[in-house]
Image (cartoon, rainbow, N blue to C red; front, side, top):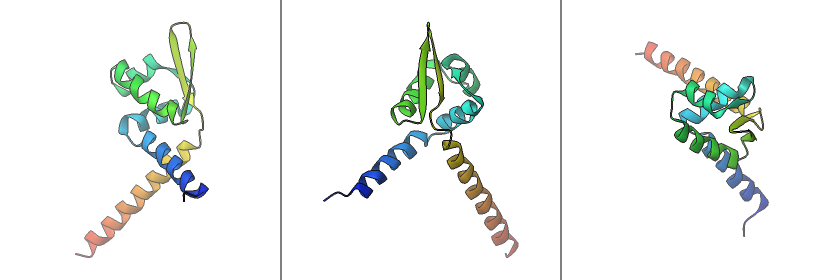
Length: 108
């Protein structure tokens, strides 16, 4: 029987999957300063609008981003800016790994 905790873990995994792509992380980082239109996002991440739109859709469906339409433009923003905390944590893990790697190399 599935528990509520298992369902929570599955939903958390969906969110992690929605963020788990370098282009998506670049978009999240770009949106940390506020709402941007898809044209500006595509230019910033140096990718085609159609490709960026597909990635944005994944993050909207997962609840990471919000979007709104204004005329012909679509604007995106972080629905939950705490996703930046997760990315900051990932950066700290990388720094820790680098220090450990340096320590191991020094021991050789």
